[in-house]
Structures are given as C-alpha cells and as structure tokens.
Image (tube, rainbow, N blue to C red; front, side, top):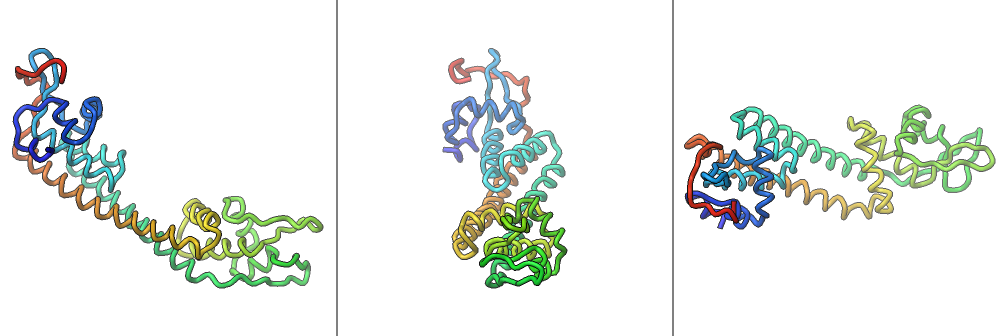
Length: 263
C-alpha cells in the first residue's frame, strides 16, 4: 500500500498511517518534529499530505534500523530544511560508529583467543591462598604497574577479594582472565569505559567460551545494521530525487474535500 501512495494525489493523515502501520498521531508527531515536510492545510485547517510526504515517511522508517531514532530524525530534519551536507555528515557518523563497533568486536574476539589458561604466580613476600595471585605477580605477568591494576579495579574491570589475614588483594582465576582481557583491549587502544561492558559480558556468560553465542549475536546485529543502512540509503536517495523534482506542499496551501474526522 505504501508504494501506491507514491503516485497518489492528496493524502489524509490516516492514509499515511495505514500504509505504514502507524497511528495518525504518530504521523502528526513526525511532521511536528520536522521528520516530514510541513503538511498542506484545507480551508478548514486540516492537514493534507502528498506522495512526497509518503516518501519522507518511508525514508525515515527505513533509516531507523541502521541509524537509530535520534540520528534518523536528525538526518530527515536536515534534508527537509535543505541542509543535505549536514544529513550526509550525520550518515557518515553512523557509518563510522558501525565500523568502530565492528573493530571492537574483532578486538574482543582476538583478545579472547589470546587468553591463555590462568597461572598462579607465587610471590616471595606473600603466598596467596590456593586459586589466587597477588597484585605484584599479576602486574609483572602483564607488564603493567600495580597501580594500573588498582585503576582497573576502580573502573569495575577487576573485582579481587581481600585476604582476611593480610588484607592484600587476591586475584582469582576469573580475575586473572579479566585482567588479561582488559590488557589486550587496552593495547588495542580501547578506553576503560569501552572495556567495562565487555568484561561484564564475559562474567555474565561464565567465561570466554560461553560468550561465543553472544559474539555470534553481536556479529548478526552488526551485519543487520550494515544491511539496514544500505536499505535506508536507497530510500533516502529516492526521497532526495523527488524533492529535487518538486517541492513539498507549502504549509499555507489550501485544498477542499478533506473530512474533519481524518484530518
């Protein structure tokens, strides 16, 4: 039904709403937000749309899955006010973010592959209880300063327990795994706030191996966003061509024959 609107005449809000499975209030909200061009008005002040509005709505809905509501709305507002370059910049930003997400995914996969079975170094100054190591030996193993591990702990990346006798931090097997993963990602240039949710996912999954299903889902979502961006680009280009061919109905244009119930 949406395709039929591309070649129709005057359209009521309910026509657009039914074509795209929306409420008439949603259509009005999109217009008020600048996502759609301003509607024409009847002599009684009721909204009337054209096929150009239908294309604008189709473009916005196609942009949503790849760019998200905020970016898609900003792109449409930029196009509708004639700022095409601003719209292209916003699209570039979304693509850059998708590429960054893809690289993060690759870095996580690489870091998880590089994780070796946790070892338990022994310090001459203090011997931890079975299944753990102290901050000094772990820092030496990773080639970082103990202060770095404490900083990671404050950021939520590590959660060592305290030895009840000495008060020293004790890093269990899971803590050593998390420290190694954090170290790999830090070497890849990722910020602590970017690493924290990855560590949380590993913990929730119960380790690196159970995280494989999460990584596959991550892959699928990244690929789906890429495909959605292609579809959105095609719909937006069609809308841009139509805008160049003819302008939207001006806000003060009046027509007759639109009933009050559907305005």
